[in-house]
Image 1 (cartoon, each protein chain N blue to C red):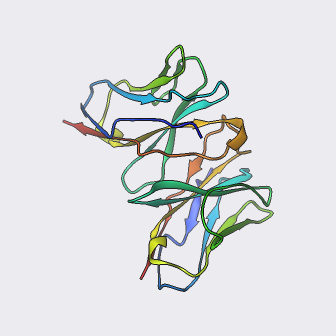
Image 2 (tube, rainbow over the protein chains, first blue to last red):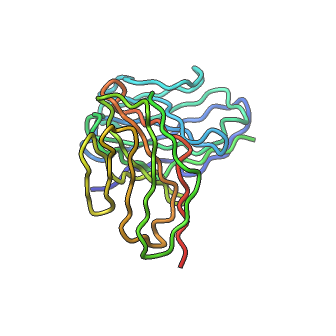
Amino acid sequence: KAGVTQTPRYLIKTRGQQVTLSCSPISGHRSVSWYQQTPGQGLQFLFEYFSETQRNKGNFPGRFSGRQFSNSRSEMNVSTLELGDSALYLCASSSLGQVQETQYFGPGTRLLVL
Amino acid sequence: DAKTTQPNSMESNEEEPVHLPCNHSTISGTDYIHWYRQLPSQGPEYVIHGLTSNVNNRMASLAIAEDRKSSTLILHRATLRDAAVYYCILKNTGTASKLTFGTGTRLQVTL
């Protein structure tokens, strides 16, 4: 099976712009989670989508949003970019998002905001 | 979320066993203990998980204290490819899909 894929891998934006990142989960997986990784804050949970519905949400401002499509692919959007949004954005998928399940991570999208 | 505490860094010689400790004194009865690791320039990858009993898989072993307030990830023979940041994470059914990463332990493996 192909692993989790994320596009694009690298992105440069300027402050005030918006950005959309894409994640394709492992085939058959219905749960997709997003994480932000920065040197200062480490890995932080953004949100999780399951069957096109947001099921869990982390402590991020409303500028961070996401959605999931019927084929389980997910996108996250960041509006009005700030310098502090520069980070590695990771997507992870699992079959049903249950407590015992393994989450499989993609390689991430590295976003630089200038 | 229940909190975990890990040493910031550890060193090991190649082909020696490595014991990575994790304290989780506020663990609840329904919290599962998961370990993930992140190799340089990669996303995290699953290592092992358990609830009460010790667990073994092809990558590692997980030893869980009887009171469940601590656990130890055991790499039986460290290789250079095991150099990574190792995260000990508690998961419960309430937020099952959410991984709360701490600062982890950076493992250095030397020849």
